[in-house]
Length: 229
Ligand SMILES: N[C@@H](CC(=O)c1ccccc1NC=O)C(=O)O
Image (cartoon, rainbow, N blue to C red):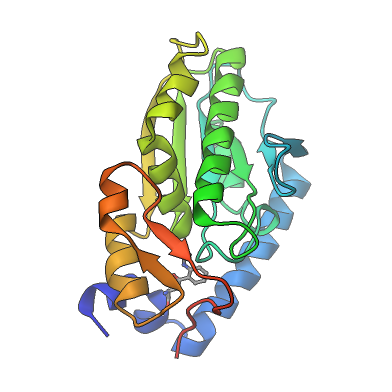
């Protein structure tokens, strides 16, 4: 295993749990804390941001915060192939309770039912939706956050020229996307060095497409997601 790949894999270095336990425990905690978020924070669920695809839905948390509060949009990970918004609201309670931000937790369709390029388009629509929300609230700005595959998706979605047109061309010059957080590191490095380098033939990286601002990852039909040993 390459050193970088090891660093991106908590299952390989956790001191609290054995390598086989880390990911199941993460899933369990993520689910539990997302349920807590829905029980403790005002939540508007299943808002349609993209009616072209069935999972183009998002949940908005903490809309009772002061109007100017920033909007944090979060895109979950899962190798473009798994997880969902319902188990991905764990970041919401600390943000909302501290009065820091309204949370937008994005759901999206998964490969191989749709391509990664389709997901990028979907996430781009969610970003535009969040900007419109921020604009309507008089928010100070939008923060884009993503974990793992989600970090790749927001990067790819916002690299696209058309996203800028979406933000500014809609006559919303007062909303700026002022931060983006890529949890679990630079998504290009993750994709190149971890997924591909790991010998997982289900993820193909196309550097030259990436340079053109096109989705740089394709998930091939019929392959399972990478699993830890
Ligand atoms: N490779 C990581 C796990 C990981 O990245 C991951 C695990 C479950 C669901 C999503 C993950 N990552 C990105 O989509 C590890 O072994 O700790």
